Amino acid sequence: MKVLVLYTNSFAYTPQVKNLESAPEPDQGQKFENCILAFIHVEVSDEEKSVISREKKLVNHLKWTARKNDTKSVVLHSFAHLSESKASSAYTKELLDAAQARLENAEFETAQTPFGYFLDLKIDAPGNSLARIWATL
Image 1: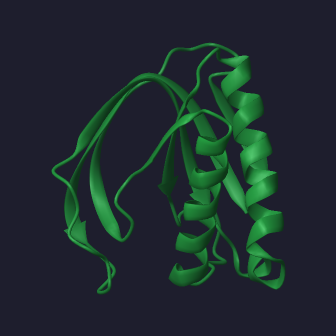
Image 2 (image 1 turned 90 degrees about the vertical axis):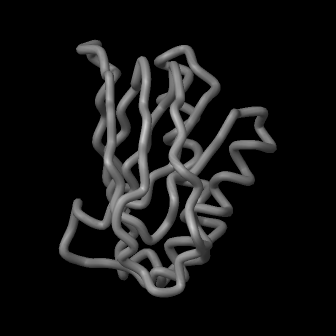
């Protein structure tokens, strides 16, 4: 799994193009303030492990990043462009849902961008040293 995490002053998205046939109809878009935006790329090798083990590793990383940036707000974004290896959409969605539930249980405000859509993004990210973190998990 590859993860690019950005701390953002503000982040907004608007759904544009459906790229997964089974994706449900999205909302009209949302805006978030003072949040961690996690671009998450789940790889084929992740599917060899349980969803629980992968989401625990992901959530621990996101919680650490959120603490370093003094926020309790996290937005999960499936982003299949950080590696050539791509897990199935079903596994990826299950992992994102599990990560969201674990974060919410830890009292984080958590959201997901619409799964299976290309989005217009508006990102305002400061130039702090821990505002941009890339990791292989």
